[in-house]
Length: 148
Image (tube, rainbow, N blue to C red):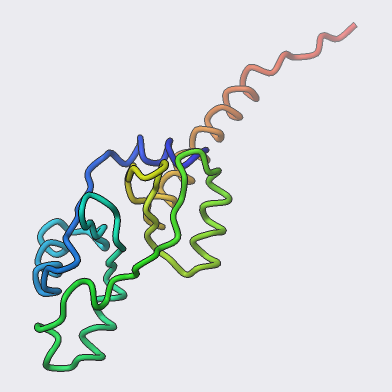
């Protein structure tokens, strides 16, 4: 399975925020939309990625002053990205090696979507379920040997 197939299963809804926006606004969007990440865009280009990990780190680092922090101050400026043609095993390896639960999927300079570790787990489950059904159907239809 490829990343573009995971995106097809997931859907194409994207949530973004401008880097100059306050962190408190990003938290509101993430909470209201029930998402764990936002892609940060500036001048029509991806400028970074904000996940709940960066939010928690910012709250911890800035203590009571965290409301004064901008998204740009805490976002990952150059996140690792996946490509639509990337194999799912390569995607999982990239996510694990770089400790990223969310990866933007880029094709050239165009953002195609974001895949999460949850999306990958769901795709693996669906793929295994399909393969299991196919194997069971194959076994049920196995030709019986005729006795001579």
